[in-house]
Length: 286
Image (tube, rainbow, N blue to C red; front, side, top):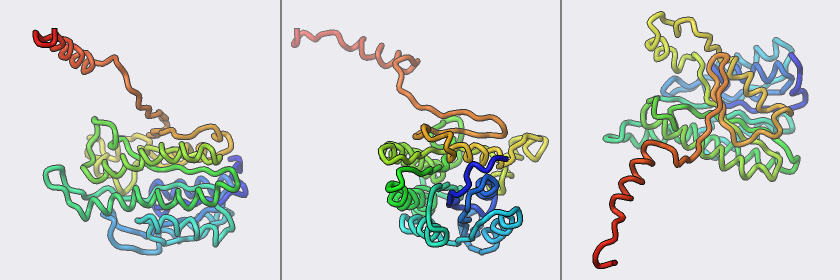
């Protein structure tokens, strides 16, 4: 593996397990120094332990890399800012931010929204990303360069998928923030992209296994490392011209999500037909 990230300092939030761990290990293997951020929460976002972050740091050090553990709770704008500042305190710079921290449980329904759960989900996904991006922009802009990758989900804007109110809304907010940040970062040499991951982790293993009768996702190769390899591309020099894009990665398949308005759809035809039928001039206006 080429060490294309030698000399770079990266922050990965939620890096103690699952996809975040894969990001941290992949970036370290490519030469980056990594601040491994994780509070060690349970699947519902509660609780904390230092063990996951420390374990990933130990893995990186064992393979000859450089890393430090960080247990900052990023679930606020200030928390997001602090983790970036901690990377600079520890390693003297910040070049890469990968916003991965989060959980999916809670939020209620449209009929019965649960405010506290919604706020918790928006905090760990949306506000955390705003905080890290805010701090990173301030530090990266004088250097005229930097790479930020946020984590979104298909459930945000694709009606085929349902993950409940809270997680869907939170990920939609991150999606929108990615596009705004990409526009603001363009003049500063900072790229901001998003990854929509399809990987088997403790967060979704039961859901995936239930969807496939054979269990264990029916043999599909949903190793988180496939997602991490695409993130490694997005933070590389080769992707200096890529910003404001959303890539979905599931196994070895890579697809791009793109939204566009169109005048060619069944609904547009229905609306224009309905309007045309009612555009007959009235007697008073004739």
